Image (cartoon, rainbow, N blue to C red; front, side, top):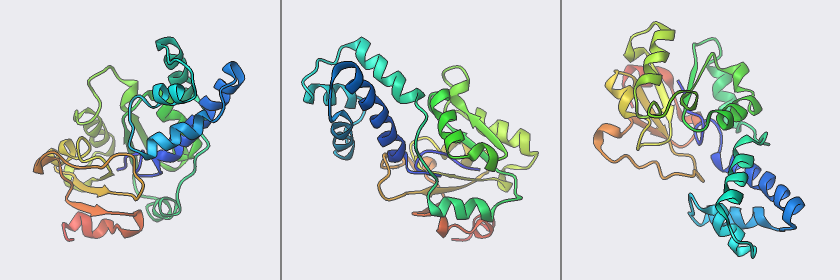
Length: 221
C-alpha cells in the first residue's frame, strides 16, 4: 500500500509544474514575468503556505485575497507535467500481480490529476483520495486504512504501507497491525520527522530500490 507525494514521485516536480501554469496565467493577465522562478526559489528556501503572496510582492504586485484564491485554483486544477522516477517504475513492475492500493491526502481534483498524469490509475488497483470525503477523514484518521483492509480482505499484518510523512502517515496503520516503511527521498518537500515513537515507521529507506517486501513482512531489517 502506497502514499503518493514524495513517495511515488517528487512532490517538488508537481510544484514546479504548478508554478509554471500560474506564471503563464499571470503573464497573460497582468504582464508579470519570472513568477515561477520566484516561487521555485522560495520553495527551495523552505517557504510554505504563502509562496504566491511572497512571489507576487517580489514581482511588484499586491497579493489580494481574490487574486491568491484564483492562483491557488489554477495551481490545484492544472494538468501537471510530471513523471514517475526510475525506482518507482521498477518497484511497480516488481509488485505487478500483487494487490496494490494508494492512500493520499490533499484536494481531490489536484490529487486525481496527479494520479492520472502519472498513469497510476492503470498501475494501482485501488485509489483512495481522502479529499473526496468530508473534512476530518484525512490522515492520520484510520478510515482510509480501514477501507483498504475491507477491500483486500486481509488481516493487518499482511499489509505494508510505504509513505514519507512521519507526522501523519504511520500511526493509524501501525495501530491496525500494518508493517510501515518511511521513504525519505533526497529533495523531499517535508522533513518527515515523527513527533512521537508511535508515529514512527518500522523501516526507513531513501529509494524504492532498497525495499524488500519479503523482509518487511517477516519483520526483519
